[in-house]
Length: 601
Picture 1 (cartoon, one colour):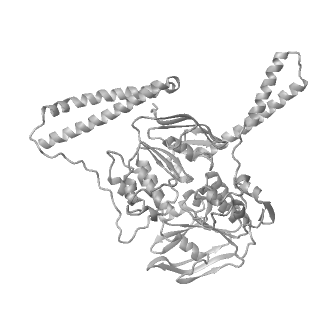
Picture 2 (cartoon, rainbow, N blue to C red; picture 1 turned 45 degrees about the horizontal axis):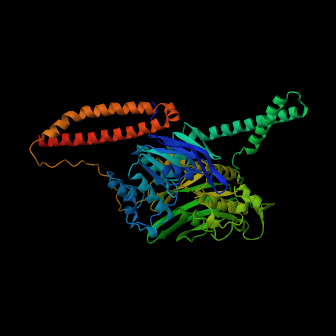
Picture 3 (cartoon, rainbow, N blue to C red; picture 1 turned 120 degrees about the vertical axis):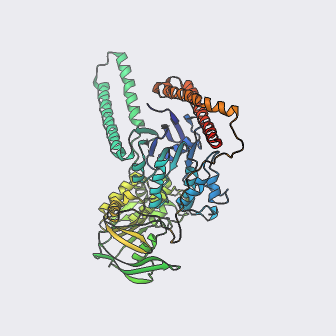
């Protein structure tokens, strides 16, 4: 029997300026649900999540949350400025009765001490603190917007395990396919302002989406045929039956309006890479590379050969030295020992994870043309910058927009567009998947598959690594790196384990002590009459209330109740919440008295 929703949005509508963003979006969250919310960048996923959290008010539609249910929302850009340190920030998110120790436990698991000052936090550290804040209370509903951004692989796998152990309902937005496949049981697709629901996990989404779009295309073709038939009748059909004529004129007008107002699927990113001459077969040869900082070895006696056409993935936890190894291999950093030999005629293009090469004051058009006019040259093809922008889902109106005004996903697409427009036979990609939507990731994977040159990629996205690379260089700790054939899954099979968190040699992993219930102190020799009476009567009262709660749940499970009598649905939901709270209170009182009875003997 289906449980009643603890949160739902119905027919949600929202317009920004003159552009409708949401035109009829629904979201239903039941107890313990595992929902992924998917859609293109800019489709309104984050906005819908904020409406569900009560942070943004829709122009129209209904929002309902069962009374007494708690919601926590993870923002993409948390603000910690009002707090002394990360521990104070996380503790401020706890409610009455929440386990105060979880704040420190979660911060430790996420690689923070709790003493970090907000002013000195990186974007990734602020996100991890925000994750600890929303997880600490173990709320009824968790709304998580890109929770894996800026997390390394050990943290992502830990987060998966933590979320699986919670009783909270989850609504997730993420570009990490493996993360979504492992956690979701329902998929909600936000497309052109409305939502469609698949009662299966994300692993089944893409096949279903393609079927939906194919059916939509077939229906549009049928509409075209009906319009042509009606237009032919209007020109050549019998005109004596005036009433029928008027009806069919109206029908034709309706069909034309339906076709005119039809919003097709959002345009796809079009990617192609400008490729340089192939160059030599040997791209990189490294022998005995070593590099240390402050006495700590980052790379120790590492050797490898990279040939033309190889796809190399570099994996390891944050702080292992992945970017340092990348810079050593590409000649951007001098080793303490060892040598690096680069191939002849090497044309390298780099996508860095911090988007550092983007001047925030530069306009979008100038960033793509290097300020040299209105044209982009890709290989032997000359493209106008507006047309090239459209390939990456930018509108002509954004041509003079400064990069500082773009979202993280849009800046990621700018970096891709710049890197792919320049001739290369070696692509170096440092965290290329950050802030990209799933369909853009698909196209990037396809492009890398067709790319004739060599690719070196640093990424925490397990699915992306599996799909793209031919071998993995893995951080083993203490500066040791080992190369494994295949992708991430192949590496795990050969190594026997995945990426582990990096810890200082003398650091011991904090373990969470088991919760202990403090026994009442012995302040009297026997139970009072009132306590004895409560011990005798509470079990019967709890049983009666449990039966009442079961009856209320059965009423709410009726799918017709909400649609036919919304007022009764709300009253019943409120009564159920109050009944369950009363049961919990009675159970706690009975447990306290039973422990007191045992203590007194």
